[in-house]
Structure formats: structure tokens, C-alpha cells
Image (cartoon, rainbow, N blue to C red; front, side):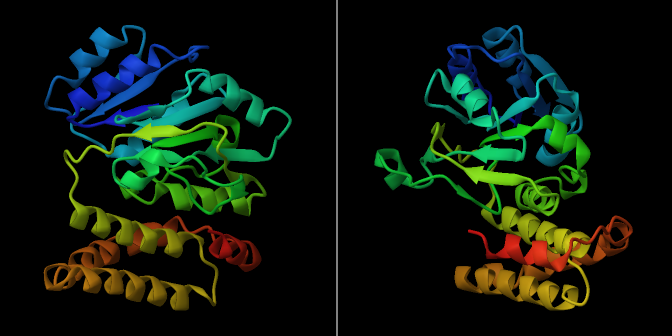
Length: 279
């Protein structure tokens, strides 16, 4: 599954790689979320058998992925960005073997060779497999039957932070989130339609809402305060222009408090703490 917005060139390159996968995927679902370019036409030309969902207006990457997870036919769903794909053409076979015999594995995610971190393009050793507290939807496999048991991605997040929130749900339910180098992901990390400050605000806001939903009392006020302070420190390090705009996400977070209190489903502190201690 892939969600994309106005990156026709990137999705075209990814589609060409997906055509070469052997074995091929059972299905390919691509959501054009609020696109105003030729994305849909490009996908139809490059991958005629792909299913295209068109959101007009855009609903956000999180809601788009939630819908694709719920409508997918397969048990294992490979989540990619429009600018990422597996480097190994037999990757799907490797991923199927990874999940065989491990009914507690909910998410597997993989090393990424990405232009965001140029040193990773030459990296040979990404270390051993280990459990983690988050993952990246630009290169991960999610087990659909487990996803449907849990809350899943929170559509109200729009963009950012759905991964750690869902990983927390999985761990709280006794499932595993695993980083493994069984495949590697080439992530070109397009700079198009990326706004670092906007993403920081969304990440901080959604982290606040996730904490509000998942963290048990009496630890909730302490962790909420820590989250706010930590995000402020991040902005402070970026300079005055970032610092003075921190109230933007504060206001957004406050506006959602009533809604997310209604969705509150706290996790036992022992499991929440285990999740916090992971890398």
C-alpha cells in the first residue's frame, strides 16, 4: 500500500520497480490523496492492475493508510512511500518466510538507504534484528488480522506519529514490533511537499494526543508535561523562528483534548514503560 500526494515522478519510479518484484504482490493499492497533478494517470499507465483510491479533498496519509489496511485482501501488507521500494526483487518471498511460524509478529520494518542520510547509501551492516518501539511506513510489513483487532492508525492524526502510536498498541496487546535486515528499502526521500516545521507541529500534536489516549493515571500529567517540554527544546535548538511558533501546535492539541479523551483507552503502566524503554 502506498499513499501519495503530487509526486507523479516519484510514484512513477516506484511503480516501475514494483512491476519487477518476483513473486509479484497479490494486489497493489495506491491512494492519491488530494492530488492536483497527473498522479492517477501515471499510476494507471505504469501499473494498470493497481487499485487506485482518489481522495478529493485529501484526508491525510494516516486516514489513507487506515482505509487501505482495512480493505486489503492479503494478510501481510507491505507499506511504502511513493519514493521508497524494496531493493531485493525477491523481497516479498523473504517477508512471507519471516512471518511464518511467528503468530505474535505484528510489524516488521527494515533498514533504509535514504538520501536523507547519505551515509546510509553506502552502509553494509545495519546490525542484528531487535525489537523497537516504532517503525516507518515507508518500509514495513503489517499483519492485517492483528491490525483489525486493535484501534489501528488514528485517522484524526492526518499525518505523522501513527507509527509509534500503533506500535504501542501492538506491544500492549502482547505482539512484537521487529526491526530486521532481511530486506533493505531504497528511500529516495523526495523533498517535494515537505515542510519541516509543519511536520514538527503535527508530530508534536499527535504525540500529545497519543499520550492522552494511551498513558494511564497517575503518570499522564507528568508524561504530557515532558512531551511538551521535549518538543519545545527541539524547536529551541532550531532557532527563534521555530520557538515562537510552538503555540501553533499547542492550540491544535488543546482543540482536540475533548475528542481524544472520549477515545481514551489507557494501557497498563508496566507495558507502557516497557515500550518507552525501547529504542
